[in-house]
Length: 171
Image 1 (cartoon, rainbow, N blue to C red):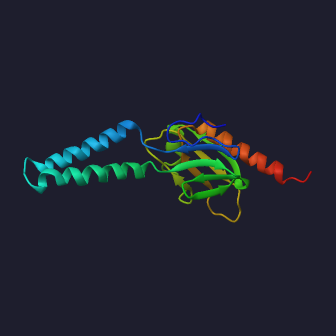
Image 2 (tube, rainbow, N blue to C red; image 1 turned 60 degrees about the horizontal axis):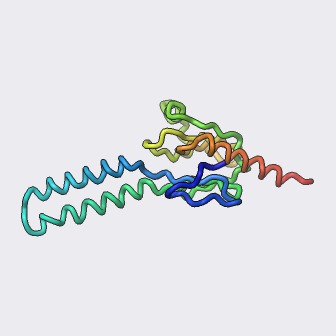
Image 3 (cartoon, rainbow, N blue to C red; image 1 turned 180 degrees about the vertical axis):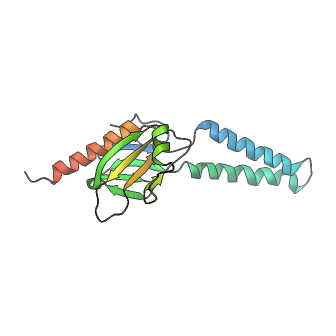
């Protein structure tokens, strides 16, 4: 199950069970661009010539590019894989998926966190999922992935895993 497609989300196809982009909220864009504009004003300080326009011409586009880069990560469940940016996890190696709220994520990533875990965490996103692995050849015990819809992502991964297991069983 996937949340309804919205801006920044491609439509769900038959082979894609879930898709999400971990972009920044509008208010983070506003804060970042205002901070860049204030810094540009500080550099300008009423001077003429190049100092009048160069700070704005450099700082605002660089800040916008940096904010876009922070929100570029995509999470998807498609074709029997959990995809997080360029990392791919075949669902046949998934033992369990646990949806986490902000407190649960803090607990999993806190003091007792496993250093071998694969983590894609975005602090501006409250929820996450913990994907427990069952692969004897891989030392990674679990993945923790930020998501705005932890229950839907967990259901999509488990459904893909179950469909894969059903398809792999002989009739």
